[in-house]
Image (cartoon, rainbow, N blue to C red; front, side):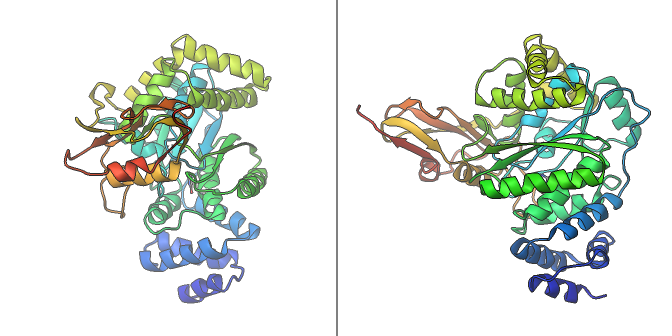
Length: 413
Ligand code: URA
C-alpha cells in the first residue's frame, strides 16, 4: 500500500477500505506517515467527506489505537456528554459537577481547542496545577470518590485522536462531519460509558454550519452508538451567538463557577437542560424530574462543592486562577438595541488576543479573553461598554475589530 495512492483516491472522491484507512492512520500514529501527508489526506477528507462505512471503520481504528476503559469494578450509573464545539462553550465544567452531585458518574474525556472553538482541556489547564493526564487507577479512584473526572486523550486513551485532533486544529481541517463524529464517538466509546448525550451546535460560531448538517450528524452518531450498544441522545441547538458572557480559558472557568454558584441566564438554562437529559437517561426518570434534581444540585450548593472537589482531586489550585491585569473597554459608538453578537467574529477576536493556537507548538495565553457586557435585546447608549478585553499588552489597538462583533439597531425610539 502507498500513502500517495490513498490521498489521491480521496482527492478523487473514491471510497477508502478499512485496510487503507488503517494503513494511513496507524502509519501516522507510528510516525511512519509525516504531518504533511496526513494533513493532505485530512484536507481531501474535509473537501470530499467520508462515507458512512469509512466513518464506522475509522471510529474502530481510533478506538483500537488505545485501550477501552473497563469501569465494571466501579459502582454506579455512568453518563457522558460531549459538545460538537462552539464559542464560549463551558458546559462540561458545569454539567459534570451537577450530575456528580446527583450521584451519577461522569468519566469525561475532552479535547483542546479546535479551530476557533475553545476546548475544555485548555480551559481546565488555565487552573494552575490542574492535571489532565491521570493514570487509569487515578481516573477510576476519582470517579468512584467524586463522580466526575475530566482528562485529555493521551498515549493510552485514543492516542490517534490526540494526534489527529492537534493536526486538524492548525491545518484548517476541523469542519468535516465524518472527522468530528469519529473524534467524538471514539472518545466516548473508549471512555466506557453507554449513556451518551451529544450536544450538537450549528451556526456561524460552530464547527457544524447548517441545521441540515446538524440533523445528519445526529443520525450518524446514533448509528455509531448502536454499533457499540451505547444509547446516544442528541440535542440540536443553534450557535450564532457566543455561549455565555465570557470567552477565553480562565475567564470561562470563572463563568462556569458563577453558574454553579447560582448565576441565571441563557447558559444556565442550557446547562440545566443538558444535565436534566443526562439524569433522566441515567436513572430512567422523566425529564422534569431530572430537571428538578439538576436545579436542586445548584441551589443546595452541592454542585459547586463537587466542582471544588473535582479540581482539587486533579491537583488544580483554584485560588491561583487569574486573568490578565490589562483590560480595555470597547465602547459603543451608536445607540439602539443590541440585535446580534456574532460568535464567529468574537472567536476571531479571541484568537487575535491569544486564546487559541496558531500552530502545534504554540502556547496559548490562558489569561486573556473577552467579557461581553451586554446581552441581546439590551438598549445600548453611546459610550456604554459593549465588551471588556483582557489583553496581554495594553498597547493593542483592536477597537474596530471588536465593534464589528456587535449589531446595534433602532436607536432614538
Ligand atoms: N469535539 C471533539 O472531541 N472532536 C471534534 O472533532 C469536535 C469537537
